[in-house]
Length: 400
Image (cartoon, rainbow, N blue to C red):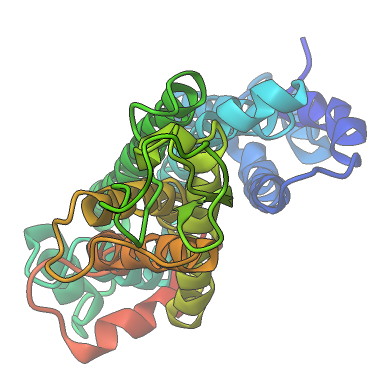
């Protein structure tokens, strides 16, 4: 039966393959670092295969530093790192990879953090003072200064009479575990909001597609055509007048302009199957303008779920929907003084304007998304100005 170090060495050739996602490379780099730390601690385990311990076993029959609990903790940390590595290097088809990426990401980092907590339980006592500073920085970042564990650890780190030692190991482990749990909760809120936004985008897109299908099969039921002049024939028109085009009266639709004829006195009779689709395309163009304009306010984030992208994607179907609804309001004379549009270009221009007007609603989603991202890594409650600077001292696996 091979040692954990031998099993890890067998996985090295697989890791040389370049990963498609940056977060996978970061996970593998963190796993390699923690495995090096475990190899350093492996010498204290009873089943260690290093040269020093083999010589000690040959002389005394058992390793002088045999500790079953330490061996179990090291094996547990190695198992967590193996799971993290397997999740980061999983191979799926492109379609399945799109849906399994978030699951693999959370599984990888959760196992990496668990291995980090287990490693803290087996490090030598002389390393605890240095580790206590790192744990305190992470605790202040995710638990806050008012948390009892953070306050107790801060008191021990700041004590000049007695340095941090073996008696404080349990406090260090519990505090680090609680800080990582708080970090997972912060990312869970980001992931939940991201899922809600994608679901809302899918629902709005379904509504937009339903309108397009309905307009394709029943174009006259939801007419977006306008007649800027009265459609009733003049009183002096002879009763025997032949139907034919008029050079004055026009019917304006999103997909074209048509001369008004006596046989089609209602503007809805000129509706085309492409009218609603044309308006939705104009609304998409207006929404795209607002997305481009909002790029100047987008900030980089270490959160792994691309929440700004989900918020931006919601604008496109919403813009198409508001364009159709806005022109229907004009068609129904809902806006006083604005009931008929004079040209096709004017109809499309109003479609673009209503598509851009969706920002009046979706901007609240942008604000909510940005506030959710700002809460990641922000200490709960009132925080001192120096808390945000602690992020630079936190372990690298916090910045997924």
